[in-house]
Image (cartoon, rainbow, N blue to C red; front, top):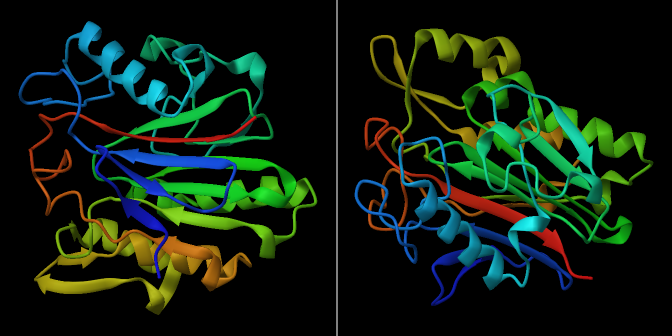
Length: 265
């Protein structure tokens, strides 16, 4: 049974354990105008900066934090992950140019920061290790998935001596295997990485439906994360236009949802 819950609020919540807040925003509950209506959290899509600031402020207030505690990654569709501390608080919070450069993954031991990233089809991977007071957030599009952003994160956790059986993973809304068609080039990258286990279904000559949820699940299990500790929301961003922005569905002219995770003090 999934621990991804949609309440009356404009967010989905991953209820992994008491003391950890993990949410994924929908497109509802903000102030942005079309085509970013209404809860766009990205400065990089052409939306009014004032609207983005207000949207971010609302989200952070709803989880009892403020923008000064937010830490954002640059998100370059690669595999670099880093530990962050209260020293990084505010990075990327009020301007994209101040986001932590070159990163697609963030980990922290601190309850004084909120980790955040933007999404519009790519897979948000939430990490919680309650026993060791650790949370994390990864951005895994097809490139990050096949390049091993999840592997980089798990290696950093292992270096800290963390027991893999204590790691919980929440895979949030993203484009699903129902809608994510890729070409032969992308399919070949997954075959090279995963062999015959690559989650591809042929649709027409040279084109396949790709299951990014399954690709990430398989790689996490191979790394030693118990399958029972991996919770997939199975919300497809492309299918639900009333709920989510989708880069693929909206041909690039759209907003971004936000993934946010933090620990209670």
